[in-house]
Length: 172
Image 1 (spheres, rainbow, N blue to C red):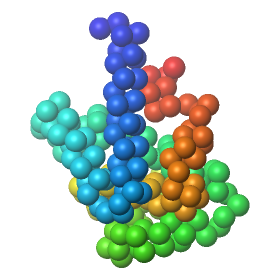
Image 2: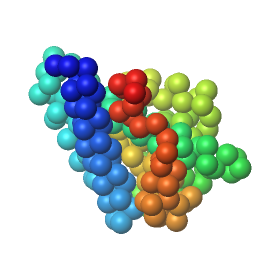
Image 3: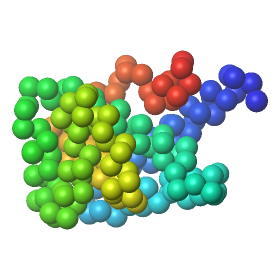
Image 4: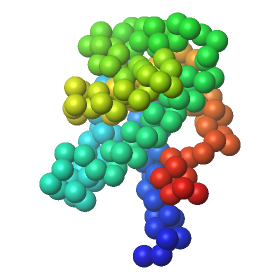
């Protein structure tokens, strides 16, 4: 496989994963429930179990995690003037989905607090296990609900013109 072809395949995979996660956020906004995020995560786990059967993680989960952390980082930067942003988002999750899901999402709020705290977020995978990716999706859905008034175009606007997950992975 040439470097160009490999980069193109990584970009396509990252785009497909990004679309899957956007759909999960959209479905969570439309009908706040844990299932859309869990279903998206299950699709990532399924891909990984077929590509790396001896591991409990893999490239799809990695791309999904990087995509969600990147998007939440963009939210953090755009809401820097709102020091209560984490509490606002957790409040939405509590009111819309329930305390249980807010408690899980709280483990991954470092990405909304600061760039420094973001480094701790991947380590929460061991704590949350199969709820790790869904917790990031719930946090992103709450962010769009609170700061973007439930409009995914707000999130797309933040993302426009920024490096993509694929460009990060391929160095392009």
